[in-house]
Image 1 (tube, rainbow, N blue to C red):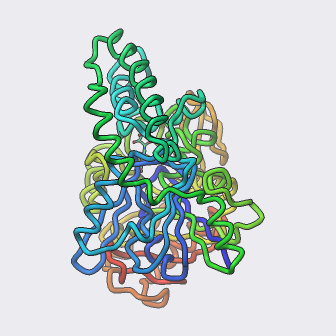
Image 2 (image 1 turned 30 degrees about the vertical axis):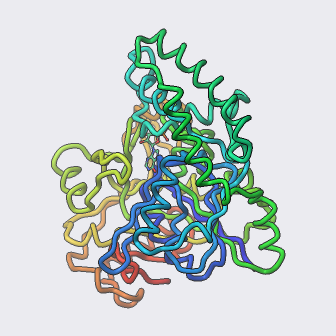
Image 3 (image 1 turned 60 degrees about the vertical axis):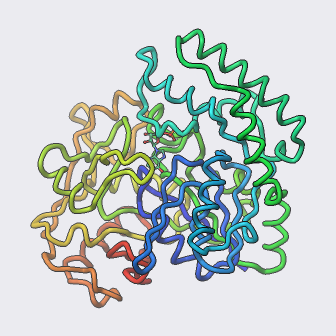
Length: 423
Ligand code: IMP
């Protein structure tokens, strides 16, 4: 029996969907433990491409059970449409999916509130995905949220929904924004609730029972460490714990039961939305990396900001999350570069440091100190083992692993399932 957690070590979009798909082969159950439809996990299998936002990527492997844990914020309309789309593509979902009765529900009013907050000049613009994530977690903390378990009691659900929707509409009116059509939304919500109700379970009890019976569990993280509400570049973060702590609170699994932590990193760095990004490349270099890596958001289509690998940020994330194995993705994107850089220290006001600062003003002042590597200038796409890699690529990967203090476990050199190997 093993319970393996997988998290992003950078700012999200590390290619977790693909690594989860690969690791799912060795797992019986896959559990998503935080975030919501702000995630966009892309998996390519042969000629088919799937982009999942709420469903665990493990759903693409036949016969595997998937769970949406209590720490996830679940948009019922998005979930129904993802399930329907996969079933139309002949992938069975409803017989293999369990949805936590404690997962909080993202309502249409949360999405409106998210958009209004972003467009208001009274607030710092975060660059959110506008999927209602922040307002839903805020309602959870304010103890006024609606949970998936409420879908099993429609009368009570309707009363709670109407009360909250009216409260939000008052707020929208005060902001001169369009109000939510409560009656029409209720009709749609009721349909979604009826569709999802058969899948609602106490997933905490089921996942622990599965562990007890010797099943292998894969805990699927979304976003990345530096978007964590506690550790990330606050306030430019998401509203959940994307670090490994989220596994315990968001899936109901005790820390002593987590046997391994996979950390996923890209061979370089990207970030979507606002906020500090010490190794960001501006101008042509950044644009070239974006084009080579096809760095456009899977959820919002926004161009991603691109930059060099930041060993300082990754080492901190590895330390906090106890990463025991590293999966490095998109190595092939660097194949044609003459020179590749890795950030090995920061200078702030002329002082050198190898720790990631907490203060937003310090973060804005960082001047990265780089170590430079000669590029390998050959394709890694057909590499299927460590020995197949060019020596300079081996040297680069070994340096990353030593710098961030985590052993290499998987290398990915292309979007397809086959373009992956274990080290
Ligand atoms: P929110 O999670 O939509 O509230 O957005 C907060 C911040 O997290 C924004 O900068 C988003 O761009 C970022 N973010 C949220 N989800 C993802 C993701 O899956 N990948 C990368 N960035 C994300």
